[in-house]
Image (cartoon, rainbow, N blue to C red):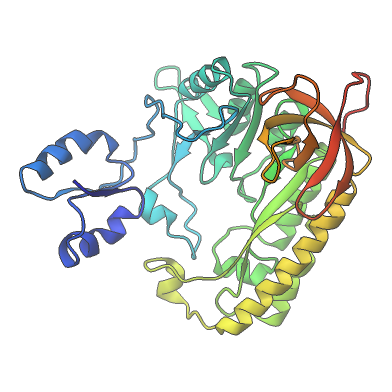
Length: 376
């Protein structure tokens, strides 16, 4: 019995079932509970298909089995779907409308993970800042800031990260919540996509360059040692050299610790595919992307070099990728730090690490045993 499950199932159902006849089941992201019926149907010789999207399904009462987990860090989905309708993005069509999960089940899952030895959770959503849950009886509303606070209060040794934030929605309330709690990491992934207001309007991002700069300034004022990362698209429809330079200047201004960088690739069914011509030649896209990557490496190199000589609280995640005599972990700013194994420390422990050297991707240092050190 062969099936394909997930957010691409709806788009591929005709090809997989009717044209190429490769699978017996095609199940969308919201049809999880229908699997027993679909399997039974397929066993009787009929194709099992359910790609309907739901406005209610959040999987709130399903506890995932975390295969291949390091037992230290885990992801918790807090919402599903997206209402933003960015012109380049297929997510609203494959994952459906936005709906938020019951905060009590989120806190219960985080508590259970902590009790099992996990020490870091990342709250996941296509746009976590728009998280909003209303109690069906009291009508009490939970915002993302309130959810963050609730998870942070589970235990001071449970670190909290979150992804992804949308520049149009991230509020000062969220930033102040991060600043109040040491165990909410000082790291925000804030995708800009483009530094050009004209291109951002074509992307339907619903913010402009000035708005994004305002949010960066708010982060710097409220959480001075916060690291910010980004997503950047090179070569979106009609992008000019001037638009591209706006992106480069935004990267320099925002001082991203790292970025996910791509060339624009048209997705069937999106607004951009229907309304705009993918008119930037591939060689121009690649050239602009190369400039973006080169600049980001330079910014990351300088960003990391500023951490040399500082001491950070690091959660040990396991052996480093290159050596079993070294541990790796991340600091609050989501930077990977590699350091020699010392004493009786083990994965899941917090240690203070003095940074001795850096490159654009990694910090290197050693464990400091003095409890009175100044931690950055």
